[in-house]
Length: 170
Image 1: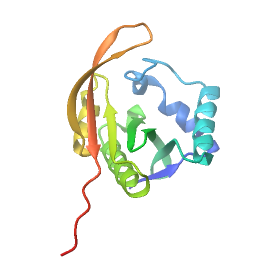
Image 2: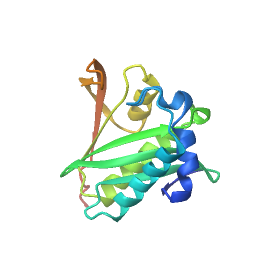
Image 3: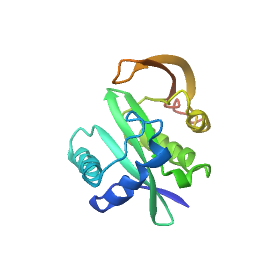
Image 4: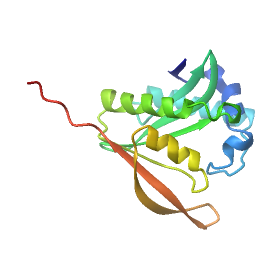
């Protein structure tokens, strides 16, 4: 069974393992291997965000049988608009964990925040991530050129999901 929970300082070794190997192939760092110090900074940033009001982001550990196998983040970008991102350890791919986590965060976002719309994107070569977003209820809006640190533009698919309209009682 998959659960989500807020990150804790003791999660740093798990976060380092998540941000390694093939898991970082499609991230902004393209092959960046997180260090112990980097993992501690990442978790500290999550803890700091949890204390900030209004809260700018939520970082959840994706936990299966007590093991933190990934991370899913919800960020507030502007009033009413948030973004979703996720990363899983390579040895956990193909089990539906990213889809389950994305669905849980979408439900959380629309039930517990003022967000009305969530956006997401994925690396053009990471087709599995596009399938995750589609299964989680996102709609592909099209392509947006995003510039890497080296200035090269890549055509990233862009997705969104909107808060469902409230149902009226008969």
